Length: 108
Length: 108
Length: 108
Ligand code: NI
Ligand code: NI
Ligand code: NI
Image (tube, rainbow over all chains, first blue to last red):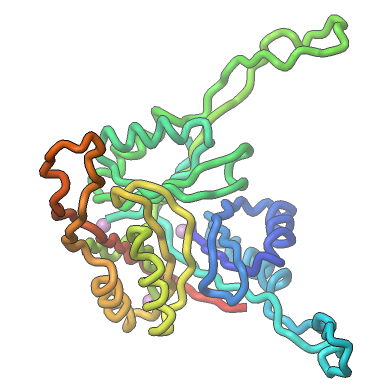
C-alpha cells in the first residue's frame, strides 16, 4: 500500500473527487490553505494498493494538470480605451502528488 | 516511530479522543470531509513509538469498530400504518488506519 | 524527498509561514485542532529534498522553539491586594516535527 497526498487547485477539486469516486478510489479530503499552489487549494489523502498508483496518477493528470486558459479581464470602469478588454492567456490547474510508503493498512 | 493516520466517523471522534488522552496517546485532529467512510468523518494524526502501535490499534478497535445498532426511523407524517415505525438495524462506526514509517521525530 | 509534518502553536504559525516563504520552502497548511501542543495549533505539510531538511529544521527551531515569556495576569476585580498583579513566567511556543520517507514526488 501507498499513501498519496494530492494537492490541487480548489477549482479542480470537485471534478477530481468525482473522478476518484467513479474509479472507486477512496479518498479523504483535508481542509487546507495556501502554499504549494498559488490560489486556494484542496488536499486529498488516498490509501491505495501499489499496483493502482499509476491509475490514480493518470486520473490526477487528466483532470488537474497545469494548462492555459483565456480569461477576459474585468472591464475598466472609467470608460477609457484599454487593452485589458481583450482576453488574456492565464495558467490554471496543476497538481502536486507525494507518494509515501505504507507499512500497514487496517479496517476495523 | 510510526505515523498513524486514523479516520473514524464523527460520532465516534470525541469518545476516541478521550480514550487517546486517558492512555497518553498524543494526537492532532484534522478537519476532513467525506471519503473513506460514508458519513462525516474525523482524521487523527498520531506519532507513536513502534512498541505502542498495537496498544493504539486496540483502543481504536474498542471505541470505533463497525457495529450494528437499532434505530427508529422518523415517523411517517401522513398518519398511515407503516412498517417504518419499527426499529431497523443499521451499521455504524468503522475505522481506517494507515501506518507509515517515520525517519525522525523532533521536539523543539 | 521527505515529507515533514510540522505542528506549532497558532501564535507562531504566521511568522513560521513567512520564514518558509522567504526561504522558498513550499508548504501546505492544514486546519487542525488540539493534541500535540496544549493550546490551538497549526499543521504544515512540507515536501522537501533530503539535503534541505536540516535547513527547514533550523527555521522551525529559530521561529517556534519552546521559550519562556513574562505575562501579566488579568487584574483581580474585587480590588483586593493580590500577587496575581505581578508578571508571571509562562512557557510558550514549541514545535513537533515528524519526518517521513517519500517514494516519489510528482508535479503535473
Ligand atoms: Ni505497499
Ligand atoms: Ni520507528
Ligand atoms: Ni528522498
